[in-house]
Length: 274
Image (cartoon, rainbow, N blue to C red):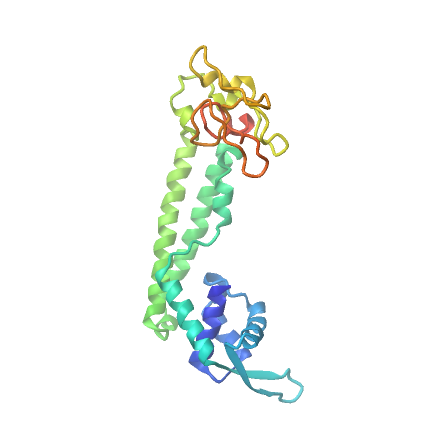
């Protein structure tokens, strides 16, 4: 929302006095809905909200014929200050927007290797098409009429896409050649399964916080077992990074979080074995 506020305040200040329709048309001509998440349907609402907050003021409302009434806006002194604050904050601070792909990638073992590799190559293909489109735009007469720094923004988008394309292809190759997903898999002799796989499915939502099956303690030194907590559950099920034999209570339930006895997060065997 801060980006939308900044861009609307900036456009109004640049074009004032200006109708809301012209603010919307200008932002869409920049394709701000694609790279700044400025949703077309939210622009009029944002203009009214900024006016209610005293950042904009409505200087006139006019209606021509049967057309909807149009309100003309200007930036107030308070709004000009807010724009400068938002502008500098976005210039000087790094922000990483949530990416649904990263959320999905965190469950990589849940997909068959063949499908995961194919999806990454498909992602690279889509990114490459976007790069080609931007490169064509950079060399067009249309781009020549735009401010020079707009071309610099496109160059940044191209560089980011090319870096991700290379990453997609590199990781797809690693998946296809069977590179291990977990550290424990990398050191296992051929034919053996990791303690994560041996533990079975123990990280389901229903079982979160339950004790780890006995097989998972197989990674402890011979003759040693995890300490037993007051509830009778194995205390060697601490979260990632915990030392074997210690428990790490879940922040909400107070129960130990699900992990193997080695402190590694528990992955269902049905996922890891794919």
